[in-house]
Length: 102
Image (cartoon, rainbow, N blue to C red; front, side, top):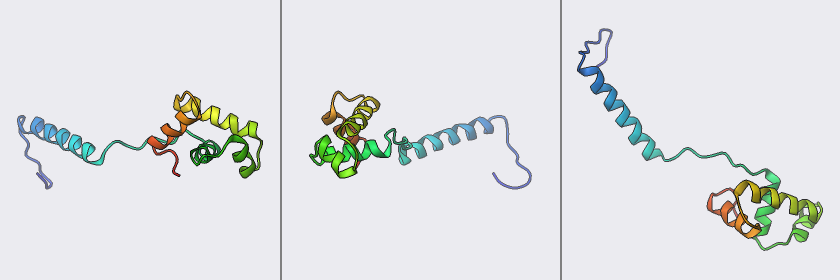
């Protein structure tokens, strides 16, 4: 199937195409799905990480040098992006999808 002069019949071309599609599908299954980009900002990830470690918004704000209100806003934004009902749900989803590590 290589060389300067290919001799492909009308029956050979569809067979090669079918084999190529099969090989592509098998390779896609072996490699797994392509990773999705992380929808969370760095600060949202950091706020969720501290929440996962049991810190309150006030504690996290003190650690990061921002106000409690800012941390609450970051958590709220992360909840919206992750379709989470509350902070605990957002942490669980972020951990499940490997968006944060503790």
